[in-house]
Image 1 (tube, rainbow, N blue to C red):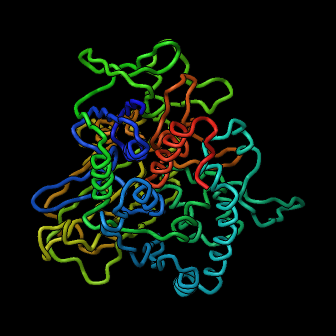
Image 2: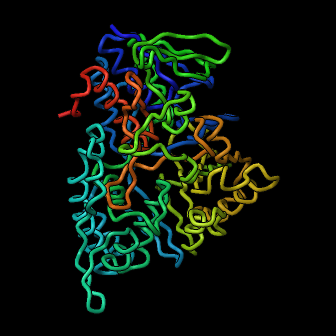
Image 3: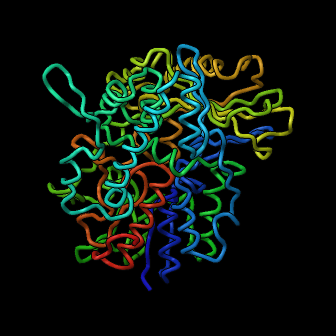
Length: 502
């Protein structure tokens, strides 16, 4: 039995802790805040409750596997999973609206044909077939296996099989997401549908690789799910599974140094000077982890570098407590697409707020999230520059941008402003305080492509030190965090020969 110290109680860290504990190890989690879950938080007031992190779950199989491997109760006995339908509703700048059925290619094709015109659905359906090919090519190396030592092969070729496009005397294939929109989808609204998905993951739609097509495919193929009581209930269930496996949690414990002995990780030192020995240490984001290991580079010249987290954007979340009942048949999620797509791009290129942001409107039909049937809780989310790229502490800044988000959301929920009892605005500064991520940035998922997104491996140059969570392989997002925990547990239990689940 090994002693294992885990830094942070995020979803990836807890997934690793539960798996390591069931393998017979003694696991202690040190969390600097007073609660678990990382970015998966909940805000509560006056009988209203709001998810302030992810609003929906994709790839629930990741957490089903975690619960199967760590105890007798399956996931569905620990949380209530509801497949939302429609998967999403979209409101475009020209006033066109479309609701997309959940996990139904035929239903999506028919809905798009009816809303956008004949042929639109077929083009989107054909795109999903090509996106599936990109998914099949990249699923194992990017999600299910430790990062290859020859990881650069993942950057050598675009895995998305673009349709040949003849331009003047040259024939080209899409290597950027926006090229798929203009060359293959050939409809500004379909392009917004595609690029809006990338934006929601914190990716610049203007430069995102074509392989980002796997993101809408993932949601289409495996569905989108609501957790009764909110996504925070998933974090609670994982935390309780850890406790069942006798994982120990120490809250309010900030790790300030990784202890080294004989050239390997040997424990952690906490603020206040207390030291805790360990045979293995599972760390947090690689960028921040470097500050805990004095005088040592955790990644060499041949590794994916641990780059600054704040080179990615963050999110503003507006929690709205509304008077009046949720109307029957309202979509759980509505995407209100920006009238000016250049505004969304400016946040990446110039670190400025878009005047007309793309806004996600989440309206869960869940009695646990509202005081009674005569009220409704709504969450608005927009991708924005991180707190190091924009001064979110400036007086009036957060409130003014929240006003713009509410105005945009009113295109999806008429009369929204008149129904607001109160609101809570959360910026990247709140994310930074809760997760420690530099600037409150949010990690994107890994993508293979010549200009894709790769995160540092779960192993480091210091023997015995591993990393789990959204800033490590395979990147951000709830399912990816769970996968990182599985990879770290496999590497510790089985050793460097571990090649992922079969």
